[in-house]
Length: 206
Image (cartoon, rainbow, N blue to C red):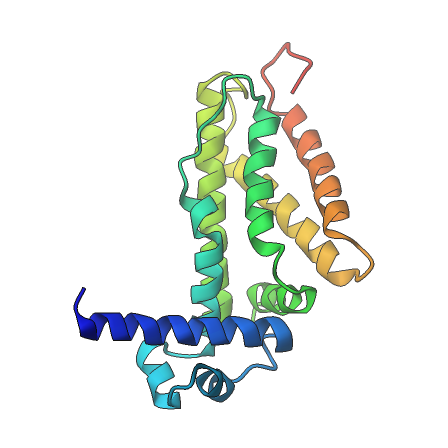
């Protein structure tokens, strides 16, 4: 990598670092591109050289935070049940969001599900599709190893689990007294109920 590329990467990293700090302290609505530029010690025009808009910056941050779990080809331990593997996958995804302030999570979910469209909402839903695809692939692998039944549609089942994840997140953001552990515990309960319909026929354990 040449000196020019190194400088460009440093500038981009500085912008993302400043943006993350501002988003986490002020929320999405309260953060401006001008504030990012000032904090990163670059010109406003420099920010727009790297990112089209404020929404593209938060999307770059959320994508980086969830990228590993959404795209990782996870190892499935021989001793792990289907529920164990699904719980581990979903917990890892939730942990990638656990650092986000409740206010920021709520704002992002509002944009994703408001139906108003826009680049932020569309980008967040596209990232959610990555989660759904990752779940579908994992369910297919589990079915192939006998941990889950082989007569269900992984894509449809992944939508059920996605619904559980989103319900848990919405409940968490709406109730300030709800802890992250309570969120995970209730999500685990819903996952167990879902998995009872996916476990191999004739087996009583998950």
